[in-house]
Image (cartoon, rainbow, N blue to C red; front, side):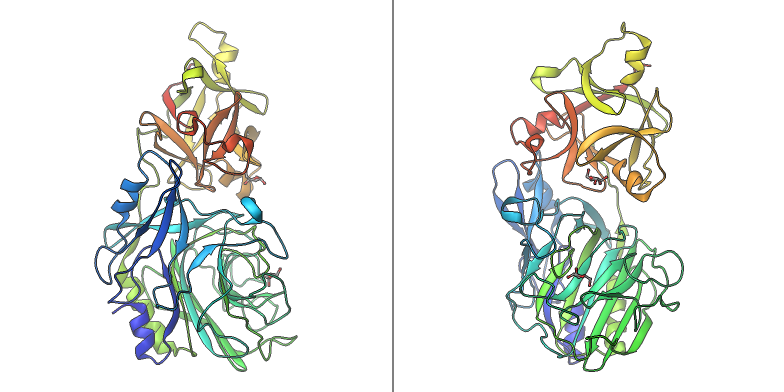
Length: 479
Ligand code: AHR
Ligand code: AHR
């Protein structure tokens, strides 16, 4: 059985079921998600390997070979067509894609395995979001519903709002109680430890318990995979969670609705992923699977769903590919675009550019083009690049330009300075992909270094010679 078969036998059927990693009904063999590639704009749908099975990741890898891909649609598996697509602009924010839409997730940003089979989750950086404002069967008003999602417990922040669930159909903040979504991160009142915590976004309020105070019964959930549960019915609601790779769910809160406009609820029935109800879009997180139900699921039903998730066997896998860039080595990066094959990544102060460098140049110039490879400051599965002439300073992105800046110890800096080398997009060497924004790669553009996305909104995102501009021959350091 799949999670939605379990909810159905509990009398609380799924009315939305989203996953890029697996079928959520044992009989489902339709499309899980759609991807679009950068080379020619073509799209294709990814299905499970078999009915009820894991996604066919090899199909994605083949379709996207030598180019970039984004996730355009996460299909609803219930037959109700509650698909998630690129989120439109809202009351709080416009996205940076055309017409104010949010960005789409890179298709390969969140690789995992399920019982050994490779699959891809949805890695959501700030600015990325999915939505459906015209749904079928999602709870409205004070009607009962339940929901769960599986997230990455190591990918979060404190900004508004990494949500999955019920929100406004107008993409505007229409008042307290107009949302009922799972929230994951450190933006709410919190609980025990330093987070992240599973909570709920009920509009104009993130909750980790029954009121706006911290909830000591809500533990930090730092496991690599997290199951998050929120459910609500008239007068009552609950927040539950656990480790999605082992063990059972715990109830962090169950009881009365908060005061201040949250009872009765005024749910509107849109579905959001990665954003707030008003398209607040500064949060980050990773989504693997999730559903919404009609009716208030019993704890026993949810406990069976958790057992099913654990049995799916989520595990981490490599975030890198291509020639190894070993921690402890010192490297140089040579450009491969025809214009520029004698140029290397170098810095002058904070500015990162390409410069012509040879072994007979001055020690000062050679050091400016030499980098220590260290364990990724923001994720130990990837790497960071420390300047050889300025110890303690690293290549980081800020507003998608690269800079050499001193490590200020912040979570944001660590993540801005973390890179997951890939096989070079043009077929040689490496492409250096941002951990925190996996659609973005080291790119030279008019001689300056950026974290560029293929066909994105900035001038330096231009598709012209993108693959060559993001492909580097990584060799030994000059000095
Ligand atoms: O409730 C928190 C956030 O407040 C909602 O997601 C958003 O719509 C509003 O800005
Ligand atoms: O480079 C993109 C973002 O811009 C970085 O994460 C942040 O430091 C800056 O706001």
